[in-house]
Length: 240
Image (cartoon, rainbow, N blue to C red; front, top):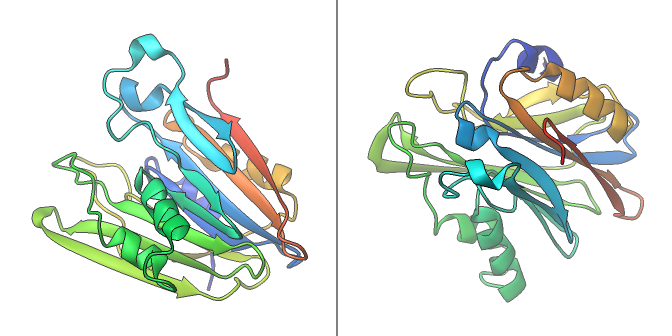
């Protein structure tokens, strides 16, 4: 049974960063969804900005930026008909593997196998990543994390999915909820229900579901599965 993602998010104070890859209820569109949240001044001081084929994070107020490490990266990039979405600079690692055609057929896995979780102990934040074929809607999701906070043990899981059923998707986040240290996401990507055919309506519903204090930015790519064309939508808590 699919989980109501809006209810799940509204009841979760801090899932951290999240990725959802989904299909619209009418089956005509695929959605690539990414959001960031923050608890510190440094992580809250961010916005999404458009780049060719995707987005980047940047400081809303550069004078408040303390450390760009793990904060500034390209969450979404496009390689041919593949949309890449991650919670860190591994987006660029995956993109480079696709560009250089390393390990044909296994670029996603091969790229991520060169990486590990973030070096922000004691949280050891997982690296969550996804790719979607913008012609077929098929996708993969991955999580790279520590073994229950053991920094010497890396767990690497990849999940492959055909095109999501109409009105459904799969969701993964960095954390289960708030805590100290923050508890990493566990289990396979969550099956969730999507209620909107419009990216704009989906944006409104998801943005309203995220915790008001901790939400920072939300990105949605709506892909027309008839031809692979897409439009990108961005919502930032802070606007210049």
